[in-house]
Amino acid sequence: MAKVSGSELIARALLQEGVSTVFTIAGDHILPVLDVMADHPFRFVGVRHEEAAVHMADLYARSTSRLGVAMYTTPGFANSLPGLAYAMYSEAPVLSISGSAELAELGRGAMQEIDQVGAAKPFVKASWLVHDPRRIPDFIARAIRLAFSGRRGPVHLTIPVDVQEIEVDESEVTFYPPEQNHPSEYQGAAATDVERAIALLHAAERPYVIAQGPAGYPETGDVLQRFIEATNLPLFTEDMARGLVPDSHPLCFGYFERGLNQAARLLPQADVLLLLGRKQDYTITYLRPPAVAATCKIIQIAPDAEAIGLNRGVDVGMVGDPTAIVQQMTAAATTRTWAPKPWLDTLRAAQATQATWTANLAKADAPMHALYVHQVIAGMLRPDDCLTFDGGDFCHLGRGYHQAQLPRRWWYLPNLGLLGSALPTAIGAKAAHPERRVIAFTGDGAFGFNAMELETALREQIPVLVILGNDSTWGIDHGIQIGVYGRGVATELGHNVRYDIVAQGLGAHGEFVEKADQLQPALDRAFAAVERGQSALVNVVIQRFVSPRAENAINRIKTGLAKHAGGH
Image (cartoon, rainbow, N blue to C red):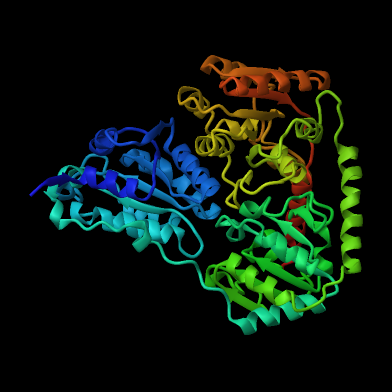
C-alpha cells in the first residue's frame, strides 16, 4: 500500500481547497512541510515578521472571499498573535498553521515549547492540535468550514513536526472534497420577520441603513443596490460593505463615521435603523440615546445570533445570510410604493456641507494639512484602485475623504485599532489582485511596526505604493493628551525622519515632500515607479492637527473625568 507523509497530506488538503498562496517565514518546525509543498504549485510569500504574514493572508482572503493561509514555527506563532486578533476583528477566513516540537516531547521542556493551542484561543474561532497525520485532511476541512461559517474569522492548527514527517497508508486517509465540506448558503429569514421589517421601514419618516462586513461576504453583485433603489432608503457603508453600492450613488451617503461624515451625524434623528451585518458596538455608542433615539425602531440582520440585541433590544432580529435576507426584503418591498421621503433632502443638505468642511481644513500651507494631501491624491485615483488605511489621524481623515466606487477596494483597519497593518494588508491585496494598483496610507508612527515588509514587496515583486503622512508624532494620542492633560507624554517621534531614504535603501522608489508644489510631481513619479513594477514610498511632511476623532475622544474623556470627580 502506498505511503504518504503528513506534510504531503497538508499540501493535498490545501490544494483541494484551491489554496495557491502561502504567507510564511521558514523555521525549524515547519521545514518538512515547506519542503514537500515546494514540489506542488504553491506560491510562497516570505515575510519579515509573522504578524505581517497574517495581515497579508487576512486581506488576501477578504478581497477574494477565498481562504488565506499563514504558516510559521513556534516563535513565529507567538509573533502571529496580534495578526490573528486583527483577523478576528476583521472577520477574515484565515487558516493559521504552526509547527511545534514532537508530540512525545511536549510537556517536557521541548525546543521552543509553548501552549500554542491555549495561547491562540482568545484570538481565533477555534484552535486545535493535530495529533495524528491521518486526521490532517479532517482538521483542515473542519477549520476551513468554521472559518467561513457564521461571522467569519481565523482558525488555528498546531501540527507537530513529527506529525508532518510520519508516513501512513493512503488507504487510512479520508479527504473531504470542498463540495462535501462547505455548508450550503445560509437560509433566509422567516417571511413574517421580513414583512415586519419592511412594514417598519415603509412607515418610517427618517429611515437609516448601515451595512457592515457580513453584507459583503459573498460576491453579492447588485443585491444591496437593488434593495436600496426599490425602497428609496438612505445607505451608509463600512468595512467589507464599502463599494457594494458606490459612494457616487444618490442613495449612498458614504462611510459611516460620525466624526468625518456630516450626513452620518444625523443618526440621532433616525426613527427606524436597519443594521445590516453591523454590530451594536462602541463605534455606534452601543445604540444608546442620544446617539440613537430611545424611540428609534431597530432592525438587525446578522450571521450570528449573539450579535442580535447585544446592547439594545431590537424590534426585528433576523439571523442568517445578510445577502439572502436582503433579497427577501427586496421581493417583499416590491409589493409597496416607496416614494422618496423629505428625509433624503435633509441628508443631502448635510452631505453638501462636507465640501465646505473639507475646504476649511485642506490647507496647502507648509507643512500641509493632511486633508490637502488626500485631496490631491484623490484626483489621481481610479475606481479600480485598492486602498488600505492604517490608524491615526492622517489615515482617519483619508478614510473619511476617499470614496469607494467598487466592492473590495477600500480597506480600513478593524475596531481593534492595531497599527501598522496598512503595508502588509496592501501586499496581501496586491498578491491577490496583481492587475490592480494598491495604495497604502500610513503615518510615521504606524509605518514603523511593519516597515521591513517593504523589502518583502520588493523581493516578491508585489509592487505597492505607500503614502506616509509624517507629523513627527503619535498624532492622535498627542492631540488627546494636549486637549485633556495640557501636555504630551511619550508621543514625540523623530523630526521629519527620512523614511523615503529608508525605502530607497531597500530598493524602493522614495520621495520626500515638504511643500504643496512638490506633491503632485512626487506622486506622478511614484505612480510611474509602481507601474514599472517597483514599490514606492512618498514621505509627506504634514502639520500637526486635532482631528474630529481626537476631538470626540477629548470630549469623552473630559466628561468621564468630570463624572468620576463628582463621585458618580
